[in-house]
Each structure stands twice: as C-alpha cells, then as structure tokens.
Length: 150
Image 1: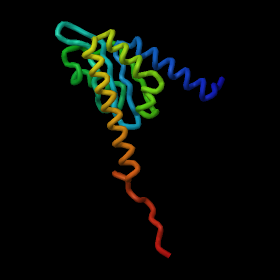
Image 2: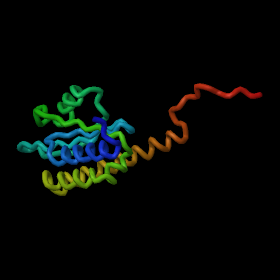
Image 3: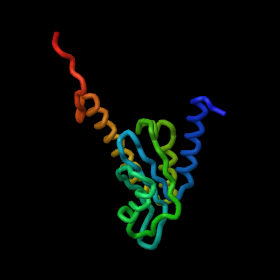
Image 4: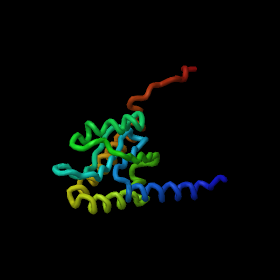
C-alpha cells in the first residue's frame, strides 16, 4: 500500500524522533553537505558521552570502524543507528529534531554535552550556507555546454 507524501514524511519524522530519543549511538548524516552529526551516549570511567561531526562514511561498516578514531577510549558500538537527513539543515531544527537531540544531550551529559551539540549544529548551518553560496556562484562547477555566438 502506497502512502501519500505527507504520511511518509510524518512516519519518517516519528521514526527519527524516536531514534534521537533512544539510540545509544546515532549518526545523522546530512546528505546535502556531506557531514554526519554523531551522538554517542556511551560512557566509561574517564570517557563521557559525546557529540561529534565527521565526514559522511562511505558504508555502514566504514562508519562503525570510524569509532576507533572518533572514540578511541571505547570499544566499537554494539549497535549503530544510521539516520539519513536529505532535507536542509535548518529543517532539522524546524521539524523538532534538534530540540529532541538537545533534550537528550542534557539528560545524558548535562550542559557540556548540550553545548557540544549546539556548536555542532551551528557548524552544520554554516557549512550549508557556504554550500548554497558556492552553488549560486558556480564554485566547483564546470560548463558542459556553451552557446555559440550567432
């Protein structure tokens, strides 16, 4: 049975919100700008929960292995939730995802983890603005067809 786009969007939002509330380790990858925001709520003595930004990994296995570099004080996660975000970065906040993430960070790691999440999100916003500016200016673009003068 096919669902209308509105219902699909609502279902996606509900699933994303639930993942942000409950996943021990979640990587939200912002497709448009090629970056992932990762919440790792695991902790051990001397290792606190963290929010980190990283490039999008090429495969789920590559993301899992990236934890050796990103969180060297912890073993690889037993479970990893991968969540694609194809919309604009600002929509992450507009659709309530950021608020849920920040509430979770406050619960898991207090004001420091929350501040880290805010700083990570702000960096994503800046990266998207740069991406859009470059797109409008044609930075990194190549002309594939040029009109010949009459």
